[in-house]
View 1 (cartoon, one colour):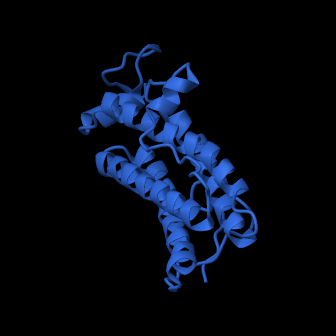
View 2 (cartoon, helix red, strand yellow):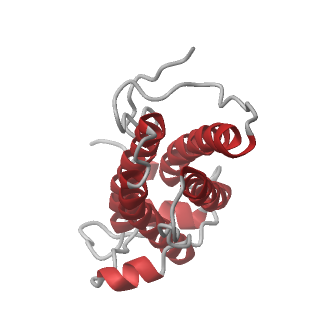
Length: 207
């Protein structure tokens, strides 16, 4: 007869589909799962709405094809972030709001509205501040999960890597467009639009 294995039993009883061991384990390590779920929903809302607003912003960068390409990378990668984190919300026992208006209203970042009388400078500034909000959001989630919830931390960290690159892109572009100064981002655009080397686990360009 096989010996009993210590990981075969826990708080969740065999056959119980109303509880999740994946939740039990991170709660035991100090994660407030309800709080984390709510923050992930808010963050997912920000990524989803940013994808929408970046579509409009990109359309109005007419005559600046290089800016449009960079905006397109950020736009598509924000959609990838939404796709990456949404299943985790459900794994933690949560879900997306049924009403998209509620979802947009609770986004963790302000709407990236097209400005009145849009110029390349005004659009780049909106793009930059949207990325900075995303960096703050995902840093907070990394802090909540580091050493306690490796799955959520891994996803949040991957998203944070790309949001940090997006900020560097828009600093470079806005500095040159508005101030006439060069502040290099340190890297180039993606090999293909929306490549998302971290959140899609793609091989990435490393100069």
